[in-house]
Amino acid sequence: MSETVKLTYKDKNYEFPLIEGSEDEKGIDIKTLRAETGLITYDPGYKNTGSCKSAITFLNGEEGILRYRGYSIEDLCDKASFLEVAFLLIFGDMPTAKELDLMNSEIRKDSLVDEDLKSILKSFPKSAHPMGVLSSLTSGLIAFNPTSVDIESEEDMREAIIMLMAKFPILASWTHRKVKGLPLNYANTSLSYVENIAHMMFKLPHQDYEPSPVVVNALNKLLILHADHEQNCSTSTVRIVGSSHAGLFASVSAGISALWGPLHGGANQAVIEMLEAIKADGGDTKKYMAKAKDKNDPFRLMGFGHRVYKNFDPRARIIKKAADEVLNELGVNDPVLEIAKGLEKETLNDPYFIDRKLYPNVDFYSGIIYRALGIPTEMFTVMFALGRLPGWIAQWSEMRRNNEPIGRPRQIYTGSKHRSI
Image 1 (cartoon, rainbow, N blue to C red):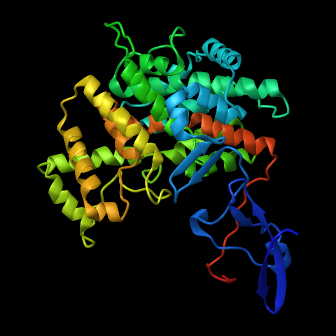
Image 2: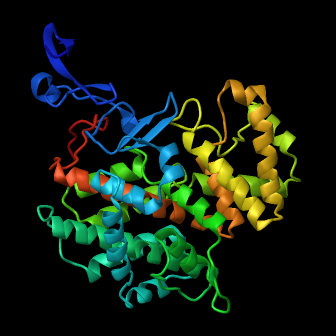
Image 3: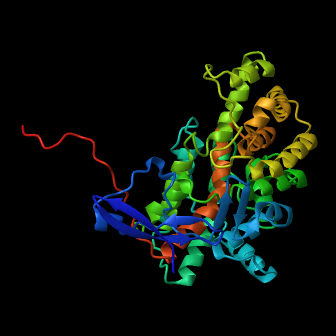
């Protein structure tokens, strides 16, 4: 007999079934709550609300576990390429060699964008924030590919997925080049997916460019680590926009806008801005450690601790090594990065931070890597979006294939009662 939860309201008893996930997570199925009782739940920020059933990503913040389709993030970063992980997220299993070759081939054939998209790019002033530019360019793809995706057609679905996986890195690199005032690069189809991203972003017109294995390895890990993260703000946005049967490109464009916010994708940008502020104030890390411990001081260390992970961010352990390798490879002499290393060392050895499990998170280390690569601070969130793309695609696809109903949250009305003029 299945378990139920009992609710007593106005001397009446109601029973609601428990549902259980594959990792023993349990939830109360309240689909009929309002119809049976006239009540709704109140859960600001949906912190305790399961909006869907999903087979894509498992996250256990208490134990520091992150898995994609059952594979640990540690294994994937050690043994897989970003494109393999993208295939896994979107299609459900690790690709065979033949499947990976086919996906690579399809992406290479589709690695062009309509030249008229340059008109959209040129219309933005150089001061425009890259996330606004990227969101607009992604929306612009709709105009050049107006046909709606037929979710009943495997061919249509795959075509839309490949198109976005192929063209999105071009749009992201063009956004980067716009910020830097550099001519636009096109895809080099002789390179791997991640090597090509590095090529399009960093190749200068007067120099040959050979992607550094250390840089490519770091980018590969960063993209994998950001590829999906369960039902976060931007992913939930992609799903709820898509629930209206909006297309894939429109839904992803909305996800980019959600990711833009400093409480979500802008966290690694906030890390560098904090380090810049410490540098401008003389670079005394001990002073700012003391400020972080002072409950009456509004200063907060950015990039330490995590809203979901209560012990440690498993992604940070992986990317810390890549950050050290990039700094050693490039030999960067940057006082801001020296401050970062000083803060890292002090917090990892300070009982105050150890007791509270305030360890450096993935945003701390990703900001350091992007800074070392010469990526402008305002571009950090675009790099996040580049990694999160396969997760958004997978979540949108799952939502549509499951024929989930249109998202329509309720509210507790607190305004005036009926009034007459």
